[in-house]
Length: 257
Image (cartoon, rainbow, N blue to C red; front, side, top):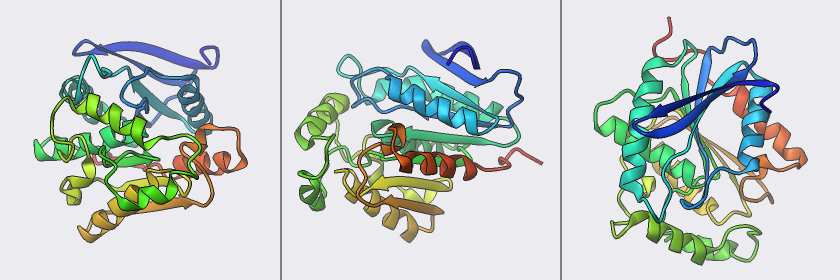
């Protein structure tokens, strides 16, 4: 990966991050990517594979922060670390604009970060891309029970315990922890990728319905009989999804001319 791409390390409020782009390219679009980790674990090879696949498809720059992890840190620490970086990239994104992207819990954090920035009167990303996002940390949707047996990856009990550690005693219905409870009309144009064998799927459907009812611009892409984070695996459908992500990136940001 490092032979093909140019990697620049940086630090924002003490949090390390990397900017990655193809060598010799001049990207006009940027992605800030928050990887999923159950709130607990560092970035894995599957996340770097996703980054690599996206970079090979377009001249873009992808910023990947190493944000704080539970149980040593909680959601407030995560927001305190990410907000300075978010403000930096929204203010310095190239003409093509900024896409905030996250998978799993990183998707929930990405959505919550957009909502919090809007509440604070800060600039928002030009687009939000959510890959199998965790939008209700408490997993309270009754329809989740119907998917427990068919989901090959995620466990409700393990997820709830991870959410408990991340919330650190705070209300799981705080929109910064569970963005499904936020004011969704404040979302930027949003695309949600979800699969029917993922316990997070019911909340993706509910989130999309709520956002649409608020008048938000939302696109829901549903893959039948696929599993959590399929786009990171070597399955035929992954290639199509990666193409969809790239072709759906904005051509011009709010700061463009």
